[in-house]
Length: 420
Ligand code: LLP
Figure 1 (tube, helix red, strand yellow):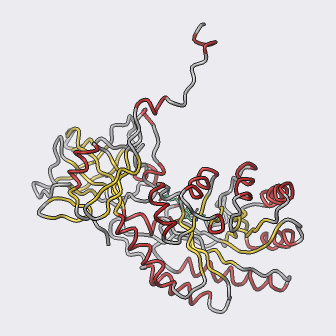
Figure 2: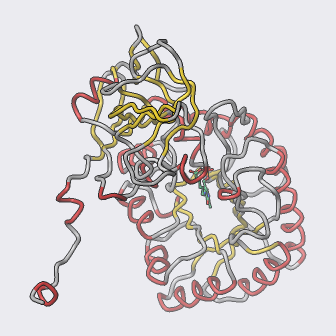
Figure 3: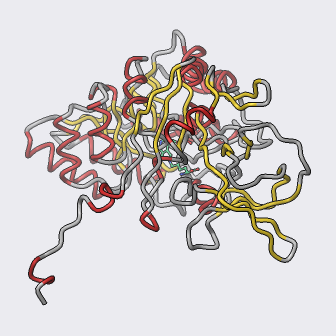
């Protein structure tokens, strides 16, 4: 359910004609609906009422400061994976006590920053990281809360690039190995062993893998208890999928219900790290048709957004619906929607049955709220697009479109070289 709908043939976000925003701010731009964000948070939080838990939004899905600040106000915490994300989370007003830090490659500087921010816990991904975090905790004279990211070796049945819970993936520590690490951590003076964590993949459309993972963790929790290790937190990661085309993922209600049943009796505070399910279908990418070209019977609709704006189709062959901003039923034909970038992999949609789109027409690339702008780049020296947040009849530019000056602002021309 989202807030993008046709009214008298025009695509609206809430009460605003998207073509009006395009006229004001130019294209391409990402547009998010605040009421939908609110609704999605409630859909997730509602069924968790009465359950001791903390939802830590996975910022890698969307790290707009405006959206994060709104989430902070709604009581959400953050799952961060870099110093940059931690910086944003804190600046957006998310308290350190609501931040979990995941990721296989935390640097010493990032670790220090997180220790100083008093985060809820580090999700540790390797034996060496455990040592380093202990060293840094000792150096700073602070006791640091940790959990171990356990790789439960379950198949999330998702795209191989976004599957993380199999033993061949780089994430976490396997079940057996984690026991030794927990025992070691327990003896480390500056570490406080508080939790156990797993995240098995993203865009999951079945409940089974989540439950399988919990079953394995429960087994591990019981074994660790025998060794005198007890936890406060059970971090279940993120991963719940959304509908891009015809997927039918479980509703957050069903997801929460199944998890509540699976964790019954454990007495642990649950930590969730949802990203996509909260933000994916709250946003779109609006782009303009530059050219229509036809070659050996194939139609290409060239638009002004490319893989630098939304890389998901190029990287994962991901499907995003394409909706024209003006409802148009004229002569549907198969076409590829492609970007301006000099790569054959630069496409937003392939072989789609689309109405006739001509130069100047505007289209929306749907379900672009998660892993859209956060994965954008400046490839081909293309300035990053603007981000717009809509609330009813009002819209706000929450990220300005980059300028050409922005593109070169960080660069330095050394005199020594120029004189040669
Ligand atoms: N927690 C951890 C430790 C993660 O690695 C991730 C996602 C999440 C939570 C949030 O997962 P979500 O609820 O959004 O599924 N760029 C890819 C997705 C990569 C996901 C990486 N990790 C895409 O565009 O599909």
